[in-house]
Image 1 (cartoon, rainbow, N blue to C red):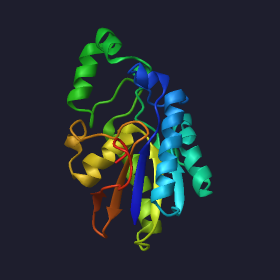
Image 2 (image 1 turned 90 degrees about the vertical axis):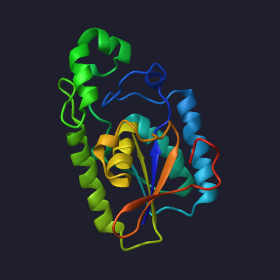
Image 3 (image 1 turned 135 degrees about the vertical axis):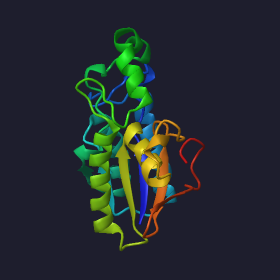
Length: 207
């Protein structure tokens, strides 16, 4: 099976470089445009997917809506695909965080797999819910090698998939080449592992 990961479009908080986490922030005008353009390109390049999943947070469901309209698919809401919860750090910028809680922030950056923001999640906790969803998806879909599934999620979720499922190393989380807002990543399950493929025919920034 093939899986297309899409990162939600831009929000004002993204533009301001704030940690969003579970905060339910809508797309801004640029983000809505990114969602429409990516939906147009994907609908021209790909056959109709079998399913369209999205994090239940507004910025993802808004990004998924043009795709749903293009393909005539329902949006299947998946709370397990939410961004990492930043707890008390949500809607802070990096500069604000380093002024208010620098010692704990440095520990988290050094070891996000085991450390967590106050009242937030560690990467281990994020990975537990994301991996659980992925395994259920494989149980349902892996027998259909020619099927494509689309998933609209968040930067942290996709980065986890890249580090753990593509590179087999959670320590690579900060080092993978992440996916930008309104951009897509294509992976294929070969029966044993996920492999990244190139999405042909999309503008630069959507491959």
